[in-house]
Image (cartoon, rainbow, N blue to C red):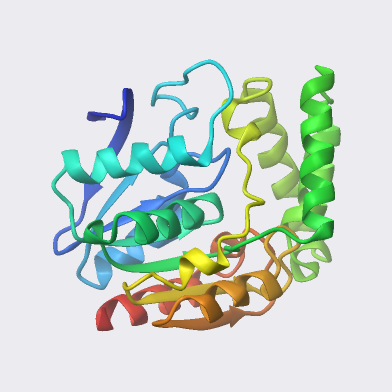
Length: 267
């Protein structure tokens, strides 16, 4: 896997497919190769090339010690775009990756041709602030919960009732989350990233065309928060996909892929 030096860190990336490039930016705690399960094949079939990468804190990219900020992640992605000469590029961002794309569109509009913002938000509400505070309190305590507990909580938080009511599917997801938890480093730098700042006013200055894709059963970035992003950005539409939670790109990949490619084909 090739690497690029960006903002003082080494980022592992992969280019594949042929055609105009789409940069895919993953969310917190997940590897870039997750995109290759469903999204990059669909983009390749639609005639696009793709660039996926592992954010700082996700091996084999560098894992610097200490706490990371959203500004760190934005600077990393900016450095990668510039090093690979991708600008202005189409960007697809998921969760934290969508927040990165939003900040790039705000502060570095010359880098962004268009953006698909999946499971995103422009601020946190009371429930999400409480959850973030609880996560930080757990990190600061130094307690590492058992993998089985983490997997059980993750299933309930990340998936839709449609998936939770399927015993076979839940069993598979529990195994995946337990394995993922076992591989994670305690108190990863990404876990400290603050995403609560209200950016609605700043988003009103975005000039790139955007699409927000929300997931109807998302508890992490619920549709009412995602819709605020679409309302704030002047040239932005909104798509809400049913029967999926925060991992809708994996629960309902065909619907997500169709929403991505239909927008990119026009922008």
